[in-house]
Image 1 (spheres, helix red, strand yellow):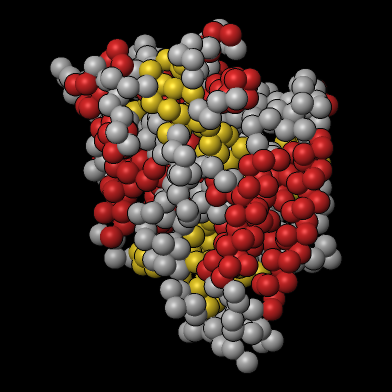
Image 2 (spheres, helix red, strand yellow):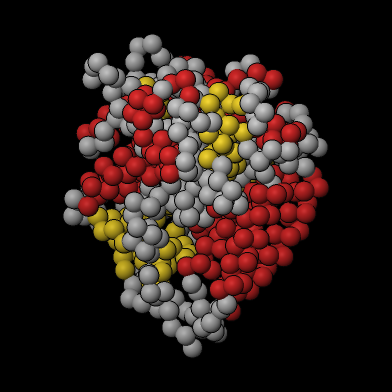
Length: 551
Ligand code: SIN
Protein backbone atom coordinates (compact mmCIF):
# COMPACT_ATOMS: atom_id res chain seq x y z
CA UNK A 1 0.00 0.00 0.00
CA UNK A 2 1.25 3.49 -0.82
CA UNK A 3 1.18 5.96 2.06
CA UNK A 4 0.67 9.63 1.30
CA UNK A 5 -0.51 10.24 4.83
CA UNK A 6 1.18 12.84 7.09
CA UNK A 7 0.40 14.23 10.56
CA UNK A 8 -2.92 16.06 10.99
CA UNK A 9 -3.34 19.76 11.81
CA UNK A 10 -6.06 21.99 13.19
CA UNK A 11 -6.98 25.65 13.46
CA UNK A 12 -9.97 27.90 14.09
CA UNK A 13 -10.20 29.39 10.61
CA UNK A 14 -8.72 27.68 7.56
CA UNK A 15 -8.36 29.99 4.57
CA UNK A 16 -7.66 28.33 1.23
CA UNK A 17 -6.02 30.76 -1.19
CA UNK A 18 -3.80 33.80 -0.79
CA UNK A 19 -5.07 36.53 -3.12
CA UNK A 20 -6.67 39.69 -1.80
CA UNK A 21 -9.78 37.84 -0.53
CA UNK A 22 -7.80 35.15 1.30
CA UNK A 23 -5.17 37.39 2.88
CA UNK A 24 -7.62 40.06 4.02
CA UNK A 25 -9.99 37.44 5.47
CA UNK A 26 -7.05 35.90 7.33
CA UNK A 27 -5.93 39.26 8.72
CA UNK A 28 -9.40 40.09 9.98
CA UNK A 29 -10.07 36.57 11.30
CA UNK A 30 -6.90 36.67 13.40
CA UNK A 31 -8.86 38.55 16.05
CA UNK A 32 -11.10 35.47 16.40
CA UNK A 33 -8.45 32.78 16.86
CA UNK A 34 -5.73 30.79 15.11
CA UNK A 35 -5.79 31.15 11.36
CA UNK A 36 -4.03 29.00 8.80
CA UNK A 37 -3.74 30.07 5.17
CA UNK A 38 -2.93 27.28 2.73
CA UNK A 39 -1.83 28.28 -0.73
CA UNK A 40 -0.63 25.98 -3.45
CA UNK A 41 2.39 27.97 -4.67
CA UNK A 42 4.23 30.97 -3.20
CA UNK A 43 1.75 33.21 -1.35
CA UNK A 44 2.26 36.15 -3.70
CA UNK A 45 1.49 34.02 -6.78
CA UNK A 46 -2.22 34.76 -6.93
CA UNK A 47 -4.48 36.15 -9.63
CA UNK A 48 -4.69 39.36 -7.58
CA UNK A 49 -1.03 39.97 -8.26
CA UNK A 50 -1.71 40.26 -11.99
CA UNK A 51 -4.64 42.67 -11.69
CA UNK A 52 -3.51 45.80 -13.43
CA UNK A 53 -6.43 48.20 -13.69
CA UNK A 54 -7.37 48.75 -10.06
CA UNK A 55 -10.29 48.96 -7.67
CA UNK A 56 -13.52 50.67 -8.70
CA UNK A 57 -14.77 53.00 -5.97
CA UNK A 58 -16.62 56.29 -5.71
CA UNK A 59 -13.94 58.58 -4.30
CA UNK A 60 -14.89 62.15 -5.21
CA UNK A 61 -17.86 64.46 -5.47
CA UNK A 62 -18.03 64.34 -9.27
CA UNK A 63 -19.11 60.68 -8.98
CA UNK A 64 -21.93 59.01 -7.05
CA UNK A 65 -22.86 55.63 -5.59
CA UNK A 66 -25.98 55.69 -7.74
CA UNK A 67 -23.86 55.99 -10.91
CA UNK A 68 -21.53 53.14 -9.88
CA UNK A 69 -24.55 50.99 -9.01
CA UNK A 70 -26.19 51.79 -12.34
CA UNK A 71 -23.03 50.95 -14.32
CA UNK A 72 -22.65 47.64 -12.47
CA UNK A 73 -26.29 46.69 -13.06
CA UNK A 74 -26.07 47.66 -16.73
CA UNK A 75 -22.98 45.49 -17.27
CA UNK A 76 -24.64 42.60 -15.38
CA UNK A 77 -27.41 42.46 -18.00
CA UNK A 78 -30.44 42.11 -15.73
CA UNK A 79 -29.30 39.43 -13.29
CA UNK A 80 -27.25 41.25 -10.65
CA UNK A 81 -28.65 41.25 -7.11
CA UNK A 82 -29.35 44.99 -6.65
CA UNK A 83 -29.03 44.84 -2.85
CA UNK A 84 -25.58 43.22 -3.13
CA UNK A 85 -24.47 45.78 -5.72
CA UNK A 86 -25.53 48.64 -3.44
CA UNK A 87 -23.84 47.11 -0.41
CA UNK A 88 -20.56 46.53 -2.27
CA UNK A 89 -20.48 49.94 -3.96
CA UNK A 90 -21.17 51.78 -0.70
CA UNK A 91 -18.44 49.83 1.08
CA UNK A 92 -15.82 50.86 -1.53
CA UNK A 93 -14.37 54.00 0.08
CA UNK A 94 -14.02 52.26 3.46
CA UNK A 95 -12.23 49.33 1.81
CA UNK A 96 -9.79 51.66 0.03
CA UNK A 97 -9.04 53.59 3.24
CA UNK A 98 -8.41 50.32 5.05
CA UNK A 99 -5.92 49.21 2.40
CA UNK A 100 -4.10 52.52 2.71
CA UNK A 101 -3.91 52.05 6.48
CA UNK A 102 -2.37 48.65 5.82
CA UNK A 103 0.31 50.35 3.73
CA UNK A 104 -0.96 49.95 0.15
CA UNK A 105 0.06 52.85 -2.10
CA UNK A 106 -2.17 54.31 -4.83
CA UNK A 107 -1.27 56.75 -7.60
CA UNK A 108 -2.06 60.38 -6.88
CA UNK A 109 -2.54 63.35 -9.16
CA UNK A 110 0.56 65.23 -10.32
CA UNK A 111 -0.11 68.40 -8.40
CA UNK A 112 -1.88 67.17 -5.25
CA UNK A 113 -2.28 64.24 -2.90
CA UNK A 114 -5.74 63.47 -4.32
CA UNK A 115 -6.07 59.99 -5.84
CA UNK A 116 -5.61 59.73 -9.60
CA UNK A 117 -8.81 58.00 -10.74
CA UNK A 118 -8.65 56.00 -13.98
CA UNK A 119 -11.41 55.11 -16.41
CA UNK A 120 -12.36 51.69 -17.78
CA UNK A 121 -15.01 50.26 -20.09
CA UNK A 122 -18.63 50.48 -18.90
CA UNK A 123 -17.89 53.12 -16.22
CA UNK A 124 -19.63 56.48 -16.58
CA UNK A 125 -17.03 58.23 -14.42
CA UNK A 126 -13.34 58.11 -13.52
CA UNK A 127 -13.38 55.88 -10.45
CA UNK A 128 -10.56 53.36 -10.76
CA UNK A 129 -8.22 53.66 -7.78
CA UNK A 130 -4.90 52.26 -8.94
CA UNK A 131 -1.17 52.07 -8.40
CA UNK A 132 0.38 52.75 -11.80
CA UNK A 133 -0.51 49.60 -13.81
CA UNK A 134 0.40 47.14 -11.06
CA UNK A 135 -2.43 47.66 -8.56
CA UNK A 136 -2.90 44.00 -7.71
CA UNK A 137 0.80 43.50 -7.06
CA UNK A 138 0.85 46.52 -4.72
CA UNK A 139 -2.25 45.43 -2.79
CA UNK A 140 -0.92 41.88 -2.51
CA UNK A 141 2.44 43.20 -1.26
CA UNK A 142 0.80 45.24 1.49
CA UNK A 143 -1.51 42.42 2.60
CA UNK A 144 1.27 39.83 2.53
CA UNK A 145 3.48 42.05 4.73
CA UNK A 146 0.62 42.50 7.21
CA UNK A 147 -0.10 38.75 7.29
CA UNK A 148 3.57 37.94 7.90
CA UNK A 149 3.58 40.35 10.84
CA UNK A 150 0.53 38.74 12.47
CA UNK A 151 1.60 35.97 14.91
CA UNK A 152 -1.85 34.31 14.94
CA UNK A 153 -1.64 33.52 11.21
CA UNK A 154 0.33 30.58 9.84
CA UNK A 155 0.96 30.67 6.11
CA UNK A 156 1.53 27.29 4.47
CA UNK A 157 2.89 27.73 0.96
CA UNK A 158 3.18 24.91 -1.61
CA UNK A 159 0.15 23.34 0.08
CA UNK A 160 -2.77 22.30 -2.07
CA UNK A 161 -6.30 21.56 -0.84
CA UNK A 162 -7.28 18.16 -2.26
CA UNK A 163 -10.82 17.76 -0.85
CA UNK A 164 -12.99 19.40 1.78
CA UNK A 165 -13.82 17.40 4.91
CA UNK A 166 -17.50 16.83 5.65
CA UNK A 167 -20.23 18.31 3.51
CA UNK A 168 -23.12 16.74 1.71
CA UNK A 169 -21.92 13.73 -0.22
CA UNK A 170 -25.23 12.16 -1.32
CA UNK A 171 -28.83 13.21 -1.92
CA UNK A 172 -29.89 11.34 1.20
CA UNK A 173 -27.24 13.08 3.29
CA UNK A 174 -28.09 15.77 5.88
CA UNK A 175 -28.61 19.02 3.97
CA UNK A 176 -27.17 20.90 6.91
CA UNK A 177 -23.89 18.98 6.94
CA UNK A 178 -20.95 21.09 8.00
CA UNK A 179 -17.53 21.49 6.42
CA UNK A 180 -14.80 20.55 8.87
CA UNK A 181 -11.59 21.61 7.13
CA UNK A 182 -9.75 19.97 4.25
CA UNK A 183 -7.27 17.32 3.24
CA UNK A 184 -4.19 19.25 2.11
CA UNK A 185 -1.14 18.09 0.18
CA UNK A 186 2.35 19.40 0.96
CA UNK A 187 5.22 19.92 -1.49
CA UNK A 188 6.43 16.33 -0.98
CA UNK A 189 3.02 14.89 -1.82
CA UNK A 190 2.07 14.04 1.80
CA UNK A 191 -1.64 14.46 2.51
CA UNK A 192 -2.88 15.73 5.89
CA UNK A 193 -6.38 16.18 7.26
CA UNK A 194 -6.55 19.78 8.47
CA UNK A 195 -9.46 20.28 10.87
CA UNK A 196 -11.03 23.73 11.15
CA UNK A 197 -14.05 25.23 12.85
CA UNK A 198 -14.59 27.44 9.82
CA UNK A 199 -13.24 27.10 6.28
CA UNK A 200 -13.04 29.96 3.79
CA UNK A 201 -12.48 29.34 0.07
CA UNK A 202 -10.57 32.15 -1.64
CA UNK A 203 -8.94 30.31 -4.50
CA UNK A 204 -9.64 32.79 -7.33
CA UNK A 205 -10.78 31.92 -10.82
CA UNK A 206 -10.44 29.24 -13.46
CA UNK A 207 -8.95 30.99 -16.51
CA UNK A 208 -6.65 28.00 -17.04
CA UNK A 209 -9.67 26.05 -18.26
CA UNK A 210 -9.06 27.94 -21.50
CA UNK A 211 -6.08 27.63 -23.81
CA UNK A 212 -5.52 31.39 -23.85
CA UNK A 213 -5.92 33.29 -20.61
CA UNK A 214 -4.62 36.34 -18.82
CA UNK A 215 -4.62 34.31 -15.59
CA UNK A 216 -1.56 32.79 -13.92
CA UNK A 217 -1.10 29.00 -13.72
CA UNK A 218 -2.75 28.82 -10.29
CA UNK A 219 -6.20 29.68 -11.72
CA UNK A 220 -7.54 26.12 -11.98
CA UNK A 221 -10.91 26.64 -10.31
CA UNK A 222 -9.96 24.63 -7.21
CA UNK A 223 -12.43 26.29 -4.83
CA UNK A 224 -15.36 25.76 -7.17
CA UNK A 225 -14.46 22.10 -7.65
CA UNK A 226 -13.93 21.51 -3.89
CA UNK A 227 -17.26 23.11 -2.95
CA UNK A 228 -19.19 21.40 -5.75
CA UNK A 229 -17.87 17.96 -4.78
CA UNK A 230 -18.80 18.69 -1.14
CA UNK A 231 -22.39 19.40 -2.18
CA UNK A 232 -22.56 23.21 -2.44
CA UNK A 233 -24.40 24.82 -5.32
CA UNK A 234 -22.50 26.62 -8.05
CA UNK A 235 -24.09 29.22 -10.33
CA UNK A 236 -23.66 31.17 -13.57
CA UNK A 237 -20.63 29.25 -14.82
CA UNK A 238 -21.46 30.15 -18.44
CA UNK A 239 -20.46 33.76 -17.77
CA UNK A 240 -16.77 33.61 -18.59
CA UNK A 241 -15.33 37.04 -19.15
CA UNK A 242 -12.85 37.37 -21.98
CA UNK A 243 -10.56 40.37 -21.65
CA UNK A 244 -10.50 42.10 -25.02
CA UNK A 245 -6.87 43.15 -25.02
CA UNK A 246 -4.13 40.70 -24.10
CA UNK A 247 -0.78 41.09 -25.79
CA UNK A 248 -0.64 38.85 -28.85
CA UNK A 249 2.32 36.53 -28.63
CA UNK A 250 2.45 33.78 -31.29
CA UNK A 251 4.14 31.57 -28.65
CA UNK A 252 0.88 31.52 -26.67
CA UNK A 253 1.37 33.55 -23.49
CA UNK A 254 -1.25 36.25 -22.92
CA UNK A 255 -0.03 39.26 -20.96
CA UNK A 256 -2.86 41.64 -20.01
CA UNK A 257 -2.89 45.10 -21.58
CA UNK A 258 -5.11 46.90 -19.11
CA UNK A 259 -8.39 48.38 -20.14
CA UNK A 260 -7.02 51.55 -18.54
CA UNK A 261 -4.95 51.98 -21.74
CA UNK A 262 -8.22 52.44 -23.64
CA UNK A 263 -9.37 54.59 -20.72
CA UNK A 264 -6.44 56.88 -21.53
CA UNK A 265 -7.57 57.18 -25.15
CA UNK A 266 -6.09 54.16 -26.99
CA UNK A 267 -7.91 53.26 -30.20
CA UNK A 268 -8.47 49.81 -31.64
CA UNK A 269 -7.42 49.26 -35.25
CA UNK A 270 -7.70 46.16 -37.41
CA UNK A 271 -4.76 44.76 -39.35
CA UNK A 272 -5.51 47.19 -42.21
CA UNK A 273 -5.10 50.07 -39.74
CA UNK A 274 -8.82 50.94 -39.74
CA UNK A 275 -10.65 51.96 -36.57
CA UNK A 276 -13.60 49.61 -36.21
CA UNK A 277 -15.28 49.97 -32.81
CA UNK A 278 -17.79 52.62 -34.01
CA UNK A 279 -19.28 49.93 -36.28
CA UNK A 280 -20.09 47.77 -33.26
CA UNK A 281 -21.09 50.13 -30.44
CA UNK A 282 -21.63 53.87 -29.95
CA UNK A 283 -19.42 53.78 -26.84
CA UNK A 284 -16.60 52.56 -29.07
CA UNK A 285 -13.40 51.56 -27.18
CA UNK A 286 -15.08 52.20 -23.80
CA UNK A 287 -18.03 49.87 -24.32
CA UNK A 288 -18.22 47.08 -21.66
CA UNK A 289 -15.62 44.46 -22.28
CA UNK A 290 -17.97 41.73 -23.55
CA UNK A 291 -18.99 44.07 -26.36
CA UNK A 292 -15.38 44.97 -27.16
CA UNK A 293 -14.22 41.34 -26.98
CA UNK A 294 -16.98 40.20 -29.37
CA UNK A 295 -16.25 43.07 -31.74
CA UNK A 296 -12.56 42.12 -31.85
CA UNK A 297 -13.43 38.44 -32.31
CA UNK A 298 -15.78 39.28 -35.18
CA UNK A 299 -13.30 41.66 -36.80
CA UNK A 300 -10.54 39.05 -36.66
CA UNK A 301 -12.84 36.34 -38.06
CA UNK A 302 -14.21 38.65 -40.79
CA UNK A 303 -10.75 39.53 -42.04
CA UNK A 304 -8.96 36.30 -41.14
CA UNK A 305 -6.44 38.17 -38.96
CA UNK A 306 -4.60 36.79 -35.94
CA UNK A 307 -4.91 39.96 -33.86
CA UNK A 308 -6.01 43.59 -33.82
CA UNK A 309 -3.97 46.55 -32.58
CA UNK A 310 -4.09 49.14 -29.82
CA UNK A 311 -2.93 52.57 -30.89
CA UNK A 312 -1.89 54.82 -28.02
CA UNK A 313 0.96 56.57 -29.83
CA UNK A 314 -0.57 60.00 -29.31
CA UNK A 315 -0.03 59.87 -25.51
CA UNK A 316 3.77 60.20 -25.80
CA UNK A 317 6.58 58.31 -24.14
CA UNK A 318 6.75 60.22 -20.82
CA UNK A 319 3.10 59.69 -20.02
CA UNK A 320 3.13 56.04 -21.11
CA UNK A 321 6.21 55.18 -19.06
CA UNK A 322 4.79 56.87 -15.96
CA UNK A 323 1.21 55.58 -16.19
CA UNK A 324 1.90 52.09 -17.57
CA UNK A 325 5.45 51.14 -16.53
CA UNK A 326 4.75 47.40 -16.46
CA UNK A 327 2.94 47.27 -19.81
CA UNK A 328 5.51 49.58 -21.39
CA UNK A 329 8.40 47.39 -20.20
CA UNK A 330 6.70 44.19 -21.39
CA UNK A 331 6.03 45.67 -24.83
CA UNK A 332 9.64 46.87 -24.98
CA UNK A 333 10.84 43.32 -24.27
CA UNK A 334 8.89 42.29 -27.38
CA UNK A 335 10.60 45.04 -29.40
CA UNK A 336 7.57 47.38 -29.31
CA UNK A 337 7.66 51.03 -28.29
CA UNK A 338 4.15 52.11 -27.36
CA UNK A 339 4.77 55.74 -28.41
CA UNK A 340 5.80 54.61 -31.91
CA UNK A 341 4.34 51.16 -32.55
CA UNK A 342 0.90 49.62 -32.64
CA UNK A 343 0.44 47.00 -29.92
CA UNK A 344 -0.97 43.64 -31.19
CA UNK A 345 -3.77 42.35 -28.96
CA UNK A 346 -6.30 39.49 -28.79
CA UNK A 347 -9.04 38.51 -26.32
CA UNK A 348 -8.29 35.84 -23.71
CA UNK A 349 -10.22 34.23 -20.84
CA UNK A 350 -9.91 36.57 -17.88
CA UNK A 351 -12.56 36.26 -15.17
CA UNK A 352 -15.24 33.83 -14.00
CA UNK A 353 -18.42 35.72 -13.04
CA UNK A 354 -20.07 32.58 -11.70
CA UNK A 355 -18.89 30.37 -8.88
CA UNK A 356 -19.89 29.03 -5.46
CA UNK A 357 -23.24 30.48 -4.46
CA UNK A 358 -22.91 32.82 -1.47
CA UNK A 359 -25.15 35.29 0.33
CA UNK A 360 -24.18 38.81 1.45
CA UNK A 361 -22.22 37.34 4.37
CA UNK A 362 -20.23 35.06 2.09
CA UNK A 363 -22.05 31.98 3.47
CA UNK A 364 -22.32 29.01 1.12
CA UNK A 365 -25.01 26.28 1.30
CA UNK A 366 -22.79 24.29 3.64
CA UNK A 367 -22.40 25.09 7.30
CA UNK A 368 -18.98 26.49 8.33
CA UNK A 369 -18.00 27.04 4.70
CA UNK A 370 -17.61 30.55 3.28
CA UNK A 371 -16.32 31.77 -0.07
CA UNK A 372 -14.90 35.16 -1.12
CA UNK A 373 -13.82 36.76 -4.37
CA UNK A 374 -13.69 35.24 -7.83
CA UNK A 375 -14.40 31.70 -6.65
CA UNK A 376 -17.80 32.85 -5.37
CA UNK A 377 -21.00 33.99 -7.04
CA UNK A 378 -22.46 36.72 -4.83
CA UNK A 379 -24.88 38.40 -7.21
CA UNK A 380 -22.57 41.40 -7.75
CA UNK A 381 -21.54 40.65 -11.33
CA UNK A 382 -24.62 39.06 -12.83
CA UNK A 383 -24.00 38.12 -16.45
CA UNK A 384 -20.94 40.34 -16.84
CA UNK A 385 -18.53 41.94 -14.40
CA UNK A 386 -17.86 45.64 -14.63
CA UNK A 387 -14.12 46.31 -14.88
CA UNK A 388 -12.27 46.63 -11.55
CA UNK A 389 -15.25 45.51 -9.47
CA UNK A 390 -13.49 42.24 -8.63
CA UNK A 391 -10.84 43.37 -6.14
CA UNK A 392 -13.57 45.53 -4.62
CA UNK A 393 -15.83 42.50 -4.17
CA UNK A 394 -13.07 40.47 -2.51
CA UNK A 395 -12.22 43.30 -0.08
CA UNK A 396 -15.83 43.86 0.92
CA UNK A 397 -16.68 40.17 1.34
CA UNK A 398 -13.56 39.52 3.45
CA UNK A 399 -15.00 41.99 5.93
CA UNK A 400 -18.51 40.50 5.73
CA UNK A 401 -17.33 36.93 6.22
CA UNK A 402 -15.35 37.68 9.36
CA UNK A 403 -18.12 39.87 10.78
CA UNK A 404 -20.52 36.97 10.23
CA UNK A 405 -18.26 34.38 11.87
CA UNK A 406 -17.91 36.72 14.84
CA UNK A 407 -21.63 37.46 15.09
CA UNK A 408 -22.65 33.79 14.93
CA UNK A 409 -19.90 32.58 17.26
CA UNK A 410 -17.21 30.10 16.32
CA UNK A 411 -18.58 26.54 15.87
CA UNK A 412 -16.99 23.74 17.95
CA UNK A 413 -13.82 22.05 16.71
CA UNK A 414 -14.82 19.00 14.65
CA UNK A 415 -13.65 15.53 15.59
CA UNK A 416 -10.39 14.41 13.98
CA UNK A 417 -10.86 13.11 10.44
CA UNK A 418 -9.39 9.76 9.43
CA UNK A 419 -5.95 9.85 7.85
CA UNK A 420 -5.83 10.04 4.06
CA UNK A 421 -6.08 6.60 2.56
CA UNK A 422 -4.20 5.77 -0.58
CA UNK A 423 -5.20 2.09 -0.38
CA UNK A 424 -5.40 0.40 -3.72
CA UNK A 425 -3.47 3.08 -5.63
CA UNK A 426 -0.28 2.50 -7.51
CA UNK A 427 2.64 4.88 -7.47
CA UNK A 428 3.49 5.73 -11.01
CA UNK A 429 1.57 7.62 -13.58
CA UNK A 430 2.87 8.85 -16.88
CA UNK A 431 3.17 12.62 -16.92
CA UNK A 432 2.64 12.63 -20.66
CA UNK A 433 -0.97 11.50 -20.15
CA UNK A 434 -1.69 14.30 -17.70
CA UNK A 435 -0.03 16.86 -19.98
CA UNK A 436 -2.10 15.64 -22.90
CA UNK A 437 -5.40 15.81 -21.00
CA UNK A 438 -4.52 19.22 -19.57
CA UNK A 439 -3.99 20.62 -23.08
CA UNK A 440 -7.01 18.78 -24.48
CA UNK A 441 -9.42 20.21 -21.89
CA UNK A 442 -8.13 23.75 -22.42
CA UNK A 443 -8.24 23.56 -26.21
CA UNK A 444 -11.72 22.08 -26.13
CA UNK A 445 -13.07 24.93 -23.99
CA UNK A 446 -11.31 27.52 -26.14
CA UNK A 447 -12.58 26.10 -29.44
CA UNK A 448 -16.12 25.10 -28.43
CA UNK A 449 -17.08 27.22 -25.44
CA UNK A 450 -15.45 30.55 -26.30
CA UNK A 451 -16.60 34.11 -26.90
CA UNK A 452 -19.33 33.07 -29.34
CA UNK A 453 -21.07 29.70 -28.82
CA UNK A 454 -23.52 27.46 -30.64
CA UNK A 455 -25.69 24.48 -29.66
CA UNK A 456 -23.67 22.13 -31.81
CA UNK A 457 -20.32 23.14 -30.38
CA UNK A 458 -21.65 22.95 -26.82
CA UNK A 459 -23.06 19.48 -27.47
CA UNK A 460 -19.72 18.29 -28.81
CA UNK A 461 -17.93 19.84 -25.86
CA UNK A 462 -20.28 18.08 -23.41
CA UNK A 463 -19.75 14.68 -25.02
CA UNK A 464 -15.96 14.98 -25.22
CA UNK A 465 -15.52 16.46 -21.77
CA UNK A 466 -17.70 13.71 -20.32
CA UNK A 467 -15.27 11.09 -21.66
CA UNK A 468 -12.23 13.02 -20.47
CA UNK A 469 -13.72 13.46 -17.01
CA UNK A 470 -14.43 9.77 -16.72
CA UNK A 471 -10.82 8.96 -17.57
CA UNK A 472 -9.46 11.58 -15.16
CA UNK A 473 -11.67 10.30 -12.30
CA UNK A 474 -10.22 6.86 -13.07
CA UNK A 475 -6.65 8.16 -12.64
CA UNK A 476 -7.69 9.85 -9.40
CA UNK A 477 -8.83 6.57 -7.84
CA UNK A 478 -6.08 4.38 -9.32
CA UNK A 479 -2.87 6.37 -8.90
CA UNK A 480 -0.92 8.10 -6.19
CA UNK A 481 -2.07 11.70 -6.19
CA UNK A 482 0.14 14.47 -7.51
CA UNK A 483 -0.67 18.19 -7.48
CA UNK A 484 -0.91 18.06 -11.30
CA UNK A 485 -3.55 15.35 -11.12
CA UNK A 486 -5.55 17.22 -8.47
CA UNK A 487 -5.49 20.40 -10.58
CA UNK A 488 -6.40 18.57 -13.78
CA UNK A 489 -9.35 16.93 -12.01
CA UNK A 490 -10.55 20.33 -10.82
CA UNK A 491 -10.05 21.95 -14.20
CA UNK A 492 -12.00 19.27 -16.03
CA UNK A 493 -14.88 19.47 -13.54
CA UNK A 494 -15.03 23.25 -13.83
CA UNK A 495 -14.97 22.91 -17.63
CA UNK A 496 -17.92 20.56 -17.41
CA UNK A 497 -19.82 23.00 -15.19
CA UNK A 498 -19.22 25.80 -17.69
CA UNK A 499 -20.61 23.63 -20.47
CA UNK A 500 -23.62 22.49 -18.42
CA UNK A 501 -24.61 26.04 -17.55
CA UNK A 502 -23.96 27.27 -21.11
CA UNK A 503 -26.20 24.54 -22.59
CA UNK A 504 -28.92 25.35 -20.11
CA UNK A 505 -29.08 29.06 -20.97
CA UNK A 506 -30.92 29.13 -24.27
CA UNK A 507 -30.53 32.87 -24.79
CA UNK A 508 -27.74 35.42 -25.21
CA UNK A 509 -27.12 37.58 -22.18
CA UNK A 510 -24.02 39.42 -21.00
CA UNK A 511 -20.98 37.21 -21.55
CA UNK A 512 -22.96 34.23 -22.83
CA UNK A 513 -23.48 34.75 -26.55
CA UNK A 514 -24.81 31.95 -28.72
CA UNK A 515 -25.59 31.92 -32.42
CA UNK A 516 -28.64 29.68 -31.94
CA UNK A 517 -30.29 31.88 -29.29
CA UNK A 518 -29.15 35.41 -30.18
CA UNK A 519 -31.81 37.26 -28.15
CA UNK A 520 -32.11 37.86 -24.43
CA UNK A 521 -35.15 36.03 -23.07
CA UNK A 522 -37.22 36.94 -19.99
CA UNK A 523 -37.55 33.18 -19.40
CA UNK A 524 -33.88 33.13 -18.37
CA UNK A 525 -33.88 36.21 -16.19
CA UNK A 526 -32.05 34.58 -13.28
CA UNK A 527 -29.07 32.52 -12.17
CA UNK A 528 -28.30 29.08 -13.56
CA UNK A 529 -27.88 26.85 -10.51
CA UNK A 530 -26.16 23.52 -10.53
CA UNK A 531 -25.19 21.07 -7.79
CA UNK A 532 -23.94 17.49 -7.82
CA UNK A 533 -27.50 16.42 -7.01
CA UNK A 534 -29.58 18.58 -9.31
CA UNK A 535 -29.76 21.10 -12.07
CA UNK A 536 -29.14 23.15 -13.91
CA UNK A 537 -32.21 25.13 -12.94
CA UNK A 538 -33.02 28.82 -12.85
CA UNK A 539 -33.18 30.89 -9.68
CA UNK A 540 -34.98 34.22 -10.10
CA UNK A 541 -33.05 37.32 -9.03
CA UNK A 542 -35.79 38.11 -6.52
CA UNK A 543 -35.17 34.81 -4.68
CA UNK A 544 -32.48 34.58 -1.96
CA UNK A 545 -29.23 33.04 -3.17
CA UNK A 546 -28.62 30.99 -0.02
CA UNK A 547 -31.52 29.72 2.07
CA UNK A 548 -30.04 26.84 4.04
CA UNK A 549 -28.24 27.33 7.38
CA UNK A 550 -25.18 28.32 5.37
CA UNK A 551 -21.91 29.72 6.73
C1 SIN B 1 -7.73 45.59 -16.66
O1 SIN B 1 -6.83 46.22 -16.13
O2 SIN B 1 -8.13 45.80 -17.79
C2 SIN B 1 -8.37 44.48 -15.88
C3 SIN B 1 -9.19 45.05 -14.82
C4 SIN B 1 -10.23 44.06 -14.41
O3 SIN B 1 -10.22 42.94 -14.88
O4 SIN B 1 -11.09 44.45 -13.64
